[in-house]
Image (cartoon, rainbow, N blue to C red; front, side):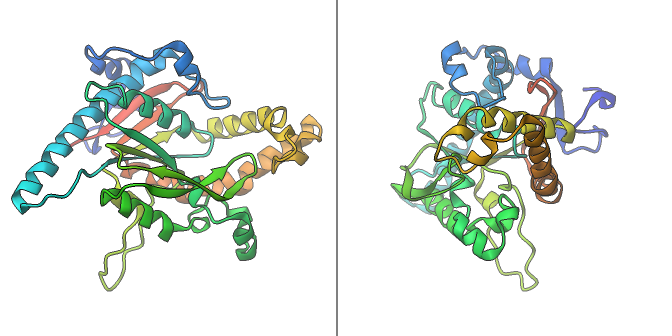
Length: 322
């Protein structure tokens, strides 16, 4: 791809990524059939993040084909290692991490991949979990003075998340994770989801690619991305991310925010001008600093980067060279 038009690798010769424009990436679908219906695709969409059959066919189907090849290769390597060790351990799930800003469309991408990967010929068992459930409950965030830092690395119960991923990688059965409600904007007490030895687990979250600080005594310090077999970063320009966040806020103000149990119920009663001011203020005060300080700097650590344009459609794909 011409380096002058690439948003992801200005210096192609020195980049660790191979960059594809939309047409080039779509051609890698090969003869893989599109086995999702329009209604199924519509069910994968998030608020203000539209997904088309074209996007699925040209972007996510080639990606699911690549991932199915990677999963098969990793399973073969695992079996070879087991033979070498004369070990009889069970299967180890292949874990895919998806990172990116608030409002960039991580949930839509995660759901699309979950659906497509489960329909490859070997019909693997695919599960999806978000790191939202590992946020500290609001009461704890308030006690720590972190409500204005919700979504920042320090707002998560990282030890619990690491323990969850370690148990998944160990092949344990019925591993539970806390359940988060975006409606009440909090972890739901006593509610959990159960992950039971999937072939593939997709982990979606803001900061899942953030590296740990290097210990001076060289002790091993595990971090979330250590458990990933493949990682994806969804990227877009800051001005677009702001627009998508504000648009989503304004849409929710007329829908979910109006529910009595909504944490943001108070925003449904104010005027449009004041709501716009609040939405932009939340972006500037919380989401933009988190993006600049913690999320965007992790982009180079991903195995694959999906770059979105104004229409929410993927314009470029960067795949790390092997």
